[in-house]
Length: 453
Image (tube, rainbow, N blue to C red; front, side, top):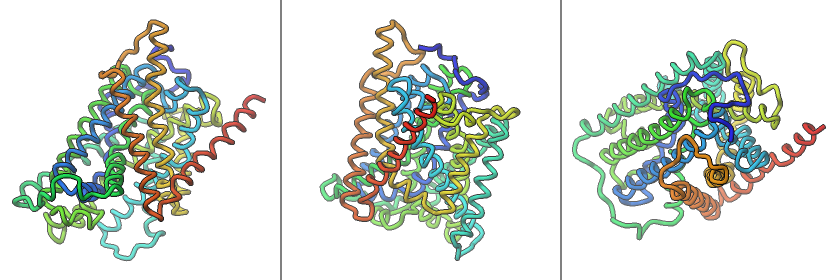
């Protein structure tokens, strides 16, 4: 095993502290999920206590994943996150497919989605009632281009802007939660029926998927591990602290929603945050919530523009992607070419308007990589025992911690299949998602043949 500080791709500078890495991770996590999904979850369970417990359980599952990634990252504190761990445990092919999925849709699709969402928030704040795709596209491309320029210039100023955005996000949500508790009066949320007797399987599957989606991004700190100071100490702190903070935030936000919106109304609107703001602030509530959404979506877009290029950079450094993407900006010290390539793909998805459909198709294919990456800890632990070594950080709970995460991911994967089977509109999503990831198979073999020559 290489020493924890060794990096076969020199040039990245370790300028991020634990707080900086945690801010990047929090920004990746706190996004459209917590603003829109609690209503669906509450309506699916039909019981506010069960719904709240489900959100807390989702945080505990994310914490299991974070603990395992803290162990993996302490072994290999390099840029690239999951790609690095898969390659160390299972070799080039599964690592390439994971990185390829992140490159073609994982990060660009999510960036496109949040940029368009931020653009829509701007339109709502300005009071534009008839917005076309082009109207939404222009601000979204400007947001994408602005953050790309900022983060291509280096992490010195990029991390400061990112940290400020996260502070604003947390402050906005705290204001919303506080207003819900002190301005909405007595709880309007009926307790609802106890138990799950009247809940459909598809509703529960959708609720579980919504919670898992809202917590996605818990591993984002691992992608920038190559730029974290004292990574064997600061990466675990960032991953664990970030998940704990977001779980507490999600619980508080859900309690605030439940305080304001009756249970019977929760399933009627996907924008439950906007409904809460209207009930608290009256006619101005819509614009207040649009402002909150704008801050959240800008922060999320910015964080993903930082993290995604590190995967292409790591793959190129291992000769599994074009070598030019392994280059760093001479002044910025960041993978500028990989960053701009990612932004170009995201812009293409925005222009064509296909990112939402492709993201829905890819959920089925992304989840197995999360389980496979977590399982890598078993392989690496076995090698350590054979070699008489120990990683700088070991996830507590032994084998149980990764198994809990893997089991939940597999259940969510099954929920995706069940939902697709029961819903004719999404029936083909798993197939198209698998085909999309499968495009990486011939590309991998062609690239290996080319590299061999």
